[in-house]
Amino acid sequence: MRAGVFTALAVGLLCVSTTAESVPQRGSHVDRVLVLKKERTLELLSRGKVMKVYKVALGGDPVGPKTKQGDHKTPEGVYVLDFRNAHSQFYKSIHISYPSQRDRAVARRKGISPGGDVFVHGLPNGFGAVGAAHRLKDWTDGCIAVTNQEMDEIWQAVPDGTEIEIRP
Image 1 (cartoon, one colour):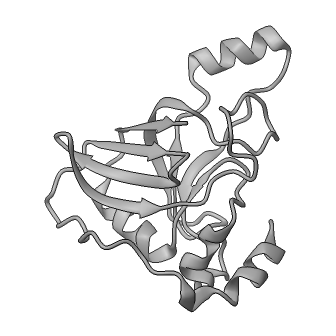
Image 2: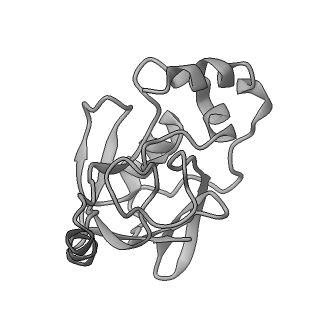
Image 3: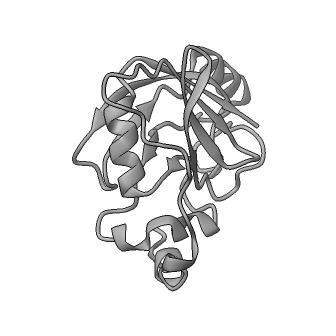
């Protein structure tokens, strides 16, 4: 993984604050997740109302949609958060259903692999102390990264099967 990025960012750990919104309450129903790549935010929504906003890090080459394996881009489009992994190489992860049928068809026409294994996740295991400083640079291979504390909140608030829309 990109451990050097985390070592460098650890220095800025105390200089970056978290979002001001309150944690979604237990029992509140998050029915949609919206990611705005340009703003580097992930929003939890309930019936169209924003419940919480998180700052995120994206793929290392974030401009434009993911089109092939290894392009370090975060996908764009509407997907589903379809399953979770409490024991991943990151502090918890929730899978994004990329590639869609459309993504596969486009890749097939180009003769390339669309890639996969795109997640919303916490920090790499062993790097939790980096905290919010991880957001100083886009560093993932195409995933959407938050702090471990934020991942705990998202994990509790967002059920499997929730729609996630990722906009440019």
